Image 1: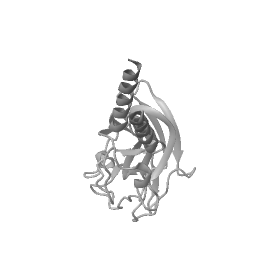
Image 2: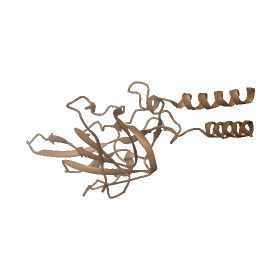
Image 3: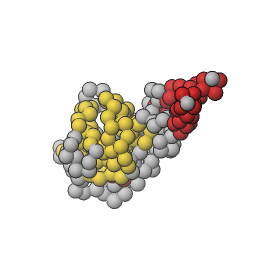
Image 4: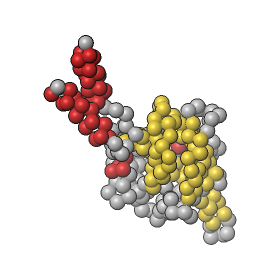
Length: 223
């Protein structure tokens, strides 16, 4: 009886300790539709942590702590080899592959300081072709979801929340920012620093072991 109570406590503690908490996860691969990108500014920069002031451990680091807008990791404003730029494109589509199916409930976007993105629509799917696609919401600077960061200043993440969904692919449809030069010529660029995802952690091996042992205990008692 004492052993069964102890194991039951272990199960409860293991499950309760992760309730409400999420871990940060980066995508395993990324692709986009951009037709022209300057050397050193590829979309891979949005998932390689190259410009972050700190690095996270994939699937281990607490998401909310790492993306905190005051004490979390910032992105340095130096662009080359750290940020992604799309040249002369008003809109872009970027697809992220998480490696397998995860329960995703938030996304962190470090919105580039010089141009950045003005709005983003987020979609989820479990197939690379996005044949079956689920809309997770629309977010923008205008609505206060994204930060129009000051130029040449290190910037923090914007966290965009939505109803948790099981997905292996996340698509971002981005709208850039228009810049008008001193001659009145308008150019639209789309750019980001980094992207990371909040996933609900799976049950710990300790909890799974405890469940198994409790099951064995009940079986023995029944016999």
